[in-house]
Length: 204
Ligand code: ZN
Image (cartoon, rainbow, N blue to C red; front, side, top):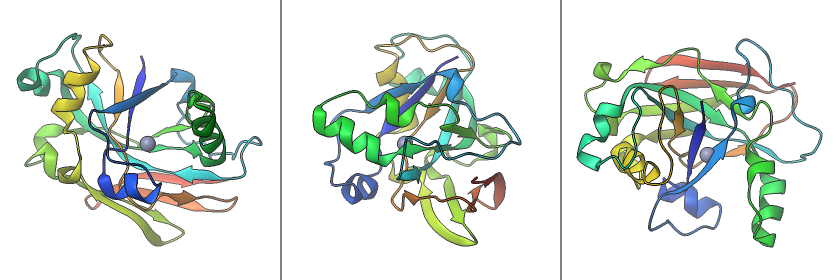
């Protein structure tokens, strides 16, 4: 499987990092080795001094597709999840300033955290109205709603599938809202979709 991540999909977050809102979806990949195994803590890697959390809604692909039209995109997924896209912000800044790819900063081992389960999309009134949040050490640091996405889930699926064949089990990180920030050893992150807790992660 592959993990596709959308960058700058919430304008308030693009702004907080000094980026313009994109005119078309910006995406990058994480390998499957980036997935943090379930029920293990996250160890801050030694190569970064500025490790950031980004809480994001996830979409799990359930059908093989290529060149998917936007109006059919909703038939290519039936589950929504929650994840953290861990980012070595210092390395990312270095890559950006040199015009280099971001993988070193975004795709390292453990950088893709998945919540404990995916939720059937039929449980939501609309996939473009899902509230999600992240709490760090008991304080809410990020809150977002999929209605504020610059590109909707269907637009993302349609766009990405022009370049990559989507396969069953592929996961899309749909972008993070404002409020990203650093973690340090001893922190605890808790992620929610609505009231439902899906992530509980100790930082070591
Ligand atoms: Zn992200």
